[in-house]
Image (tube, rainbow, N blue to C red; front, side, top):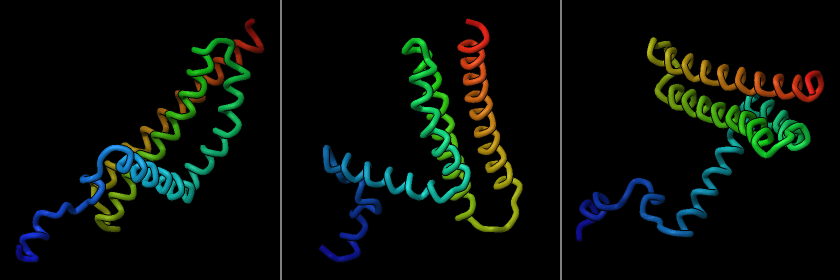
Length: 136
């Protein structure tokens, strides 16, 4: 088999050929690298530090498992949306630093998603705190 023929059939991404636990092991490594990369982003780092306080507080504040899950879930959702927004920004920045309307729209929409998830998280937490301390 010629070298050019062999190169045409080899996958660009070796992760695509992995199966089972081998694939899971490598995927976990990529995910951890993504978290390390995100830690370099100020917004994600602030949210992660807040999560270190809010996640244990959700166990204390929630009176049922549903309340605890809702409180913790909104915190995790905020972090997930921030990770996705960071990914969008990185992909747009890879294309080029010049201003383009579509690049701006993509970044603005990602930012809006973070804002909405932040408002959801804050709203749920304020309602839970109000319920716990002022209404019951």
